[in-house]
Length: 111
Image (tube, rainbow, N blue to C red):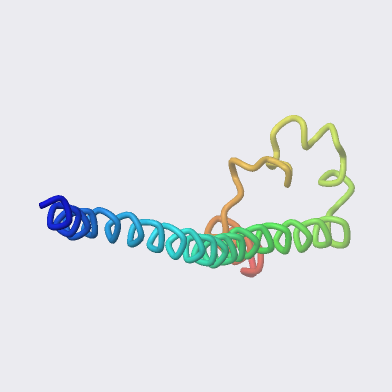
């Protein structure tokens, strides 16, 4: 009877053993796939942020060049800027690609 008891124990314990092995294999596979997926997500998100920052940098550089080459002496005067005649380039609350595009279009229109 003891021999048949051991045989049934092996059958009953097989389910638990397979469950543990399956869990371990799934954990290892999920861990490696998670790292790959995380890298892909990070690359994509970083590219989006880099693109937006590049847009801001391009407009800031363009406006700086335009102001230095086309501005009158009054526009270049730092005291006039502090009085609120225009927002400085480093005022991030006014920077967005859409507002910069619109400002540039207004500037380009003939008076």
